[in-house]
Image (cartoon, rainbow, N blue to C red; front, side, top):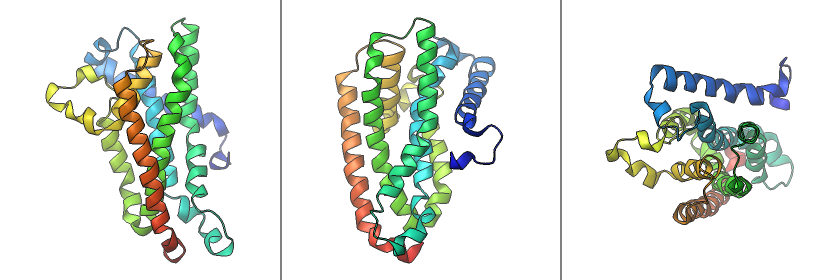
Length: 239
């Protein structure tokens, strides 16, 4: 609530901002660039877009928030004994509301259309695995942004490149064959593919896809936490 204090629409911005993006991208990729509609797996393009935007927001918004988690709590670093790793956790959980709101809207729309399949029950598991992955990145990012402040300024550019390197606003079928390697090095391909498999195709998750995503999540979570612990002693002197 604090981030929306003083605004007229308040918490409604949690829904308004992502839905504005959906409308913008839907216009660009259905009116301006027609090929997107043909690759939409039999669904309206804006629904396909929501299945990409929800997991993306669950990554980008928490990472952006976590990048300033330590600096925002600088007064507490020297005054009280407190587990500083909690600061990024709180930022991640708070910032995840936009992505969860988009996901909730999407599932309500699919249910209203009678298109919400039985495999939608697995969505909480998919979200949990993704958030484990995101939490690891958030810990590492929070620590790096304290010791390398320029990285926080560069983060929006990194996220923009990462978004267009992920099938958020397009379908993998639209990607030229020579660029398929992006899916092998970018875990968001597996995340978005899992969401679309469960929600749009009503298909069980591909075992290999889940295995790859689980490995990414485990490596990120452990690695990010270790990076945070290694740099934690420097926080009070640098912020």
